[in-house]
Amino acid sequence: MITGILVALPEELHTLTKTKIKQGECITVAKNTIVILSGSGFDNARVAAQILIDQGATQLISWGCAGALAPHLKAGDLIIPELIHTQDNSLIATHTEWSKQIVELLKNSIKYYTGTLLESHTVVALAHDKNALYQTTLALAVDMESGAVARTAQQAQIPFIALRSIVDPANLDLPHAINHAMTASGLVSVPKLMLYLCSHPSELPRLIKLGLNFNAASKTLKHIAHQLPHISKNQ
Image 1 (cartoon, rainbow, N blue to C red):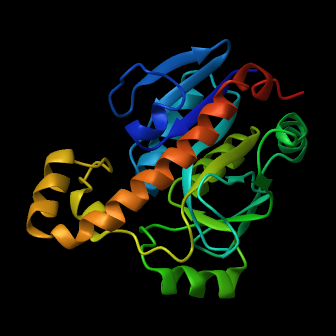
Image 2 (image 1 turned 90 degrees about the horizontal axis):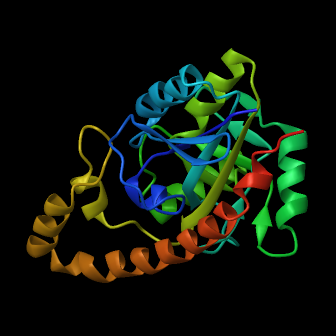
């Protein structure tokens, strides 16, 4: 089996490798394991997932961060979803046995939750929007890429799982600077981010809080990355 791992942002890529790659480029990070940097969003993820398959991937992982919808989740908690709730209200199951293997591997070393991961085509930034989505879907968390990867894997009839670490708790409003600095290709422009902060200094405390949360999420992902040789062995 060749495992293809999709990550949306360079910061998430750093939890797997120190090597810098361009958007749409693949790199080998372990035996029979390749990673692609997709950029954020559905369209970027769909294209990148297909590239992984074209490069020989026979199973796919959606890797990175997610926003909490469930109020009990904290930054750094791991989501190993059983279902992906897509934007068209369909449910796509992840690979049951593969997910169980990972739960067994990690259960004594990390805090994890199983359940439903919600797909969104936009950033869910505000706490009241997160709460509304939780009330209507009961999904634990939300991201922008896993739905596209799940669909691509389903169409190719290959196994798929998601490994997502919480970066923003349900009660946290994301800084407006994040959306402002997002480029058309789905990556965050640091110069645009800094320029926005210069004219909106009140955003800085929330951005610092988000940075601390990202450190917690990254710590979780790096811990899992050490287990990649075992995670990639889907029996």
